[in-house]
Length: 375
Image (cartoon, rainbow, N blue to C red; front, top):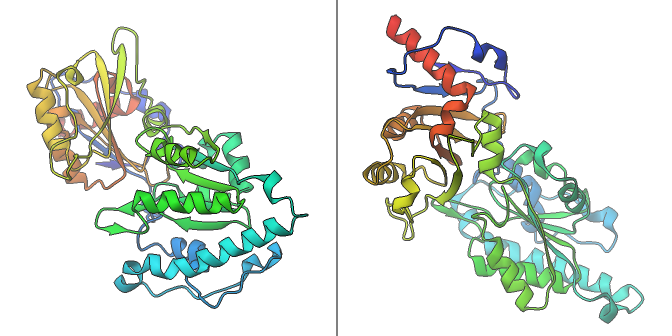
């Protein structure tokens, strides 16, 4: 049974603690989802109109970039939503990117001829958290609002991008399965370098924390080797933000004495997870799996094979901390099947461990299952 969810939804948390204790023999299975009136993705999806409205300046070859910041709001047409446009994203963007670079260089050279003293621009790697803009740091908001150019990923939420200053340029460099837009890491490196060398304040926006499965370290290393100063502004990683939203303590005295973050991506795109060590199946630890939807069936089997009890509590959270959040609770042996039944999509975070049972939503799932059995 689907239930609405509090904070962005209408369920009172106090109601989750009411009711009689339920039998521990029941298998807790629960899918909680948001109000059906909220259906659009909180992130920048590949067919998103918001994406083209933000990035439209790169698609109009006739757009004239002015040295006056007031002219940056010039209108242009939105490209048709066709596969050919997406295939040729880079070719379409390059002319306007070159124009913007020329404008920035001209501005720089016209500022009293102090080019050498000014040095290159600043590059900020900014973590935007799991989606809720209220989880941004004050420093992140300040940098976002003062940037000249922002390169953003798919998992930077629309609500966060609404904070960007009116004169800034936005460029989508995100990626999803089967669709890539300037996704080669080398191209992103070159973009960051080119605009920094032109004196721009460049912000690289990343969902979660830029140094936790965000490839921020690669970008930082490349730029530093080129003599560009890089400042990292941490964000709340999905594990912390989403666990807090669900009332799951990642560590808890007497229950879990450690937590491990694991990427579910296979090294070569297969069905096996990248790395499952024997000690990842420690029943006294909490395991948090990022990007693990496709590899969860294999991961669960390996964890159980290495000794994790099959009835270990687990949760999967789609689009956590956003109005579109949905949750599935189940024992680890059943989680993959329940995710499939609920049709969860990326991004989905998976939390496995005894601490999941401390969530009020786990107790609610027990109550629901008890009602189903009695009926």
